[in-house]
Amino acid sequence: MATVHDGNVYLTIPLSVEKVKHQNVTSLRLYDPSGQLKYTIPVSPLDTDVMQKKLGVSPGQLQYQQYIGPRPYNGQYRILAIDKSGNAVDTVTVGFNCFADTN
Image 1 (tube, one colour):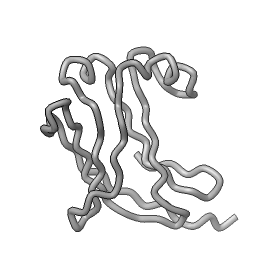
Image 2 (tube, rainbow, N blue to C red):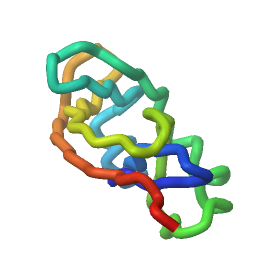
Image 3 (cartoon, rainbow, N blue to C red):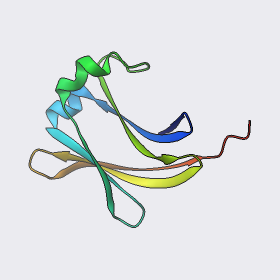
Image 4 (tube, rainbow, N blue to C red):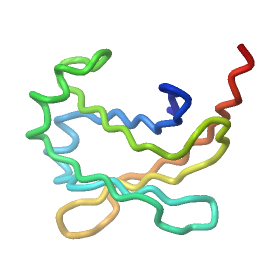
C-alpha cells in the first residue's frame, strides 16, 4: 500500500511476525516494472517492540515503510520476501496512484 506524508510517497509493507520467523525472512527486495532492484529493506522479528509503537500496527504484525518519491507518484513494484539463504519465499506485486494534492 502506498501512503503520502508531507507530500512524499511511501510504500507500506505489513508482515506477520510468525511468518517472518517461520520462513526465516531477512529482507524485502523491491523491484520496479523494468525488473531493476530499487530497494532492499532489512527485516527481523526482533523489530516487534519498535513496530508496536507505530500507529496502526496490530499485535503480531511488523510494518515497514520505504520512501519512493515525491507526489505525484504512480507506479508498480514487485516485492520479494528473501530468507537467510537468499531465496525468495514469497512475492507480491502492488500498483498505486498518488496524485498531486489540489487543495
